[in-house]
Length: 71
Image (cartoon, rainbow, N blue to C red; front, side, top):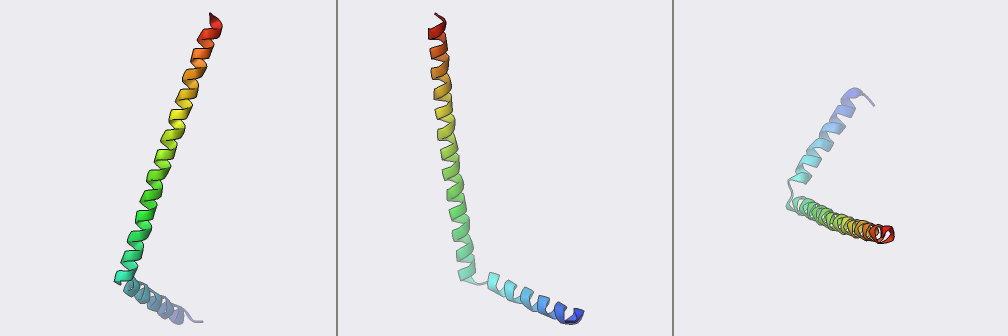
């Protein structure tokens, strides 16, 4: 294929992609994907906070046991 043919195929794909992005269905799908991503981020942050709290509890218990054993 020639460089000119490749250029026209690329240009046609670009025009098709641009027209696809302008459709309401595409915008709705993008909003849905972004919403799910934000929900996943919030759930991951909540999970990380739970793990952090559990680790702090374990550390506090270990310190108490260490003090009790030293007495």
